[in-house]
Image (cartoon, rainbow, N blue to C red):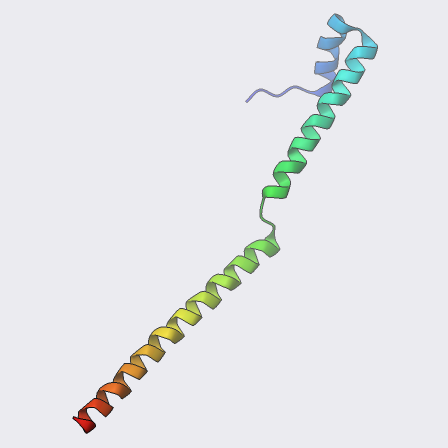
Length: 86
């Protein structure tokens, strides 16, 4: 990845465009890069988001286990009742 400092960019562009235009162009580029970084940062998960996701996953696991155990217990009870009445 190629990187360039603000001063290097300014010096290269100043030779072609002059000081006023170069200064405006460099400020514009800085603002655009900052906006792009801010936009990408908003997409990333924060630590709180990750904790929330883990909590929801754990809750879903627990609910699934409770459902499976409940279904097994109900099946067992129904099989006992079926043997008594048949």
